[in-house]
Length: 403
Image (tube, rainbow, N blue to C red; front, side, top):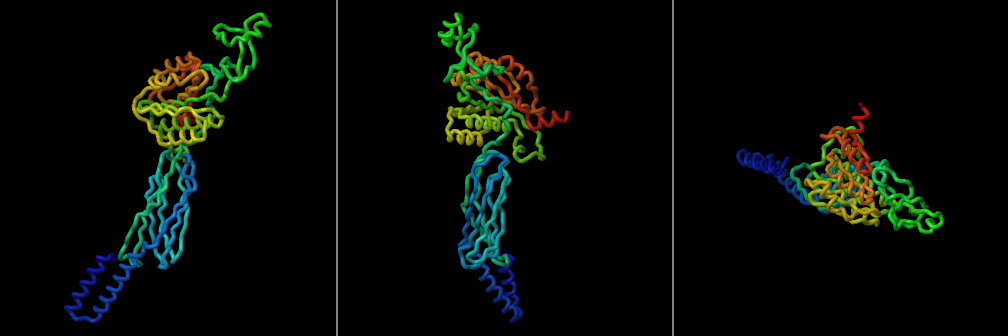
């Protein structure tokens, strides 16, 4: 019964009591007035002395992880609270911390909320809307409690074990022998001179001993800088078929953008774990560049950037490679990740290979959800001596298994 109905009822009974002089109505009116006052006062104090605490066990998680938080509601008043409804106004998808609790005087109630992180991004937990009222429901009141917490969901960690990171030992579209002509910390061996070998690599002492030109070979440097270029222009992206039967960590992979970002984040983690300096270039309308570093802060910087970035614009890979060509050298590696089947950027990649820049291309295969076949692109890249890896989407793998 709302307070408006109660007042209306009291008014009608008062009119009836005056008109028919019924003493029993007088008593009922008095009782209702007393009840009205009690309920009004109860409602005024229903949320007084209410405290809410939110404890988040991990505020940085990866897609596919479970975010766990504990919510504790405390009644600092001596009066009990028969019911308190809590509604959480969070932006995290799938998050539901709604609850109705009953608290005795000086009592408290706690519960855990588990939410699967299914989409990368920056989210807010809270604020919490607390609602309460009197025992008969005559009055209700609510208050917004600024109990907020920021959650950062990093891209999913996916399997990239099939992708070999470029180092100084890579020479275009094939795996070169273990030793390399590129200068590193130590010389491993010498071999016969071959046309095209630079003169500053000639081993003069070995040449004098053997009477013919000999060339020094160096151990490859696995800790060379690594650049990861993610192609995030809108023109080369495709939506993928939705699959509700997939595990939570794969349900977010519903566009090629998500694959590109997850692959890039996973490769960066692998390279940083190897002690390599990793830099990131995001090809989009407003390009983003993170200079190479191998610190722990760099790991967070890359993960945070990839957690919130979106695709935009129509900036081509050719333009991106041309703009940053000076950053790449034969002592660093470049990984290009794209889902665009167009091959207009192959010439720019080939030019880098001619400069002895080890280049690897990871092509996301949309598995039939894209408009074009990626095979022509992969063929052209291989001919340009770029190391090529096909990364099939979940949809693509399922389709091939059924064929």
